[in-house]
Length: 294
Image (cartoon, rainbow, N blue to C red; front, side):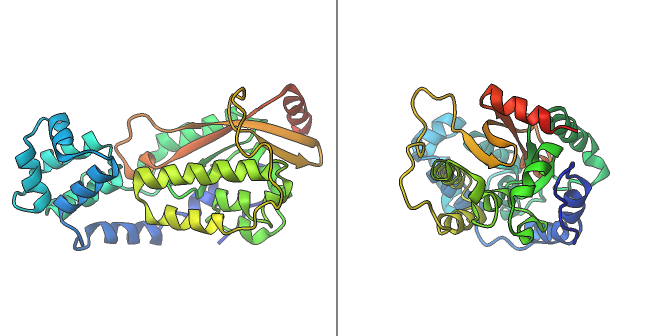
């Protein structure tokens, strides 16, 4: 497996590393005999959304009695009914597939590796956004924060990473950020950024119920934390957003970030991609980034 080089754009190494066996294994898991009934899936997601049976039934346009029968296994919903209820609950596409499989139907949404020809348009869109954001850093990640693609701006920051093993695919960008041998030593406001990352993961776990994300949050929370309190641990009310401040050979770089997702995905892989774009938080950072551009 090829290691990610420091500097320059990061594309084929990462995309290529996430094809093949992993995809086959994911499809096998999807089609395996379900361990939970569709009713249990629905009840779990309704509970996660903090909705009573009555509230959810009214919102979905069905009777509370019918919903109760579905959740208890006394009634088997049609595929269309499952998808309708899942849509009202905001269930991710991957879990919608699990729900219809649990009811005895075939998966509805395809899950293709990002390198597949069918996803060419999505890959081109990602590359265009990341490239167009240079010289500022920008990257694309999957649902577990594994790096899918990154631009040259991110590549230049990788020179700050102490342990090359952290750059071996699959690269987890949150682990890379908070690990002592990753970027943590270069983050000036580490306590604040650590708080931001862990809170972001907490919300993500609450929304998705993903056990791998929960394990990742526990791992990151166990990493060494700054000894002294950081006044920037919680953003000031006058701030626009949480700021990432990096100590680099070019001087301090300060960023705010935005996250972009595909608006109407019907493929599991595409639905789980997110693009994080780093914008200069001040003019000094922009000037320094421009000076670093070849």
